[in-house]
Length: 366
Image 1 (spheres, rainbow, N blue to C red):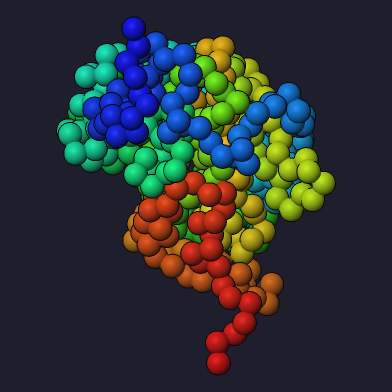
Image 2 (image 1 turned 45 degrees about the horizontal axis):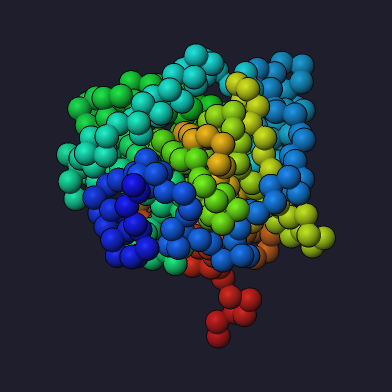
């Protein structure tokens, strides 16, 4: 017989503190979603078939430096300016690596809870590796139906020593190969802005690198929950590998006719790239960080594997000076990236509200 999780404190202790995660709930045999996971009606994705589907073909990166180079550049820039999101194929990452990543993620999360709990915050052998659930459980009114392992890259040596045995080799290869692609895309986007940066500056803007493996267990009441709530990513650019199950939705900023959310169907062999808050700030609002969320499903467990890139914490971020001069106004104030990141990770997901931290007032100080 499944244990009762009616008591919120018992549930929190089992899922969060003991490291059983959402998978532990499901494995216990629950037949309905506990109250702590039920989202307010306005946050639910209750009728997934009712959303429009993103129908743009993936961008073929192999056409860069060829006859269609200019078109590929325009497509990347246009996507960054309108949706903050696009999919790419022929990206240079081997397809068998992508399959191995998905297998490794399932293998990690299929382990007994005690094997995963060694990476809980405060217990992990390295501050660079963290296993957890939801986003910020202590701050969330309704928990997200997701478990994760995050691996911050500091050096090859640390990765080989501290990252989980089941996934460290493929995760490290994925991160490194993704970085080559991210640098190519970032250079394209900077060139489109008319901004020229030294290689050392680009390295600083992409200095923080992290790969996550996200696990969304099959959910008995997917219409009541979310896998991830509405949010934008904090950093520069994110690369995401979806599996074939789907569940990703991106919001069209400024839409007023009720069709502001698009479902992003998985495409075999494709990777998702999206703009983060930092790139929106640097571009003075020219590029849009993509607000997105994830639904759950009752059919089978889903995995996704993102690579997050961000500035080094010591970097100061703010609109590029040449863009402020061209636009005649800075839409965001300069801020130490560590302060922006601390603000982001101190609050539950709430759309793109994190950008309020650097938004300039419309009035000018006397």
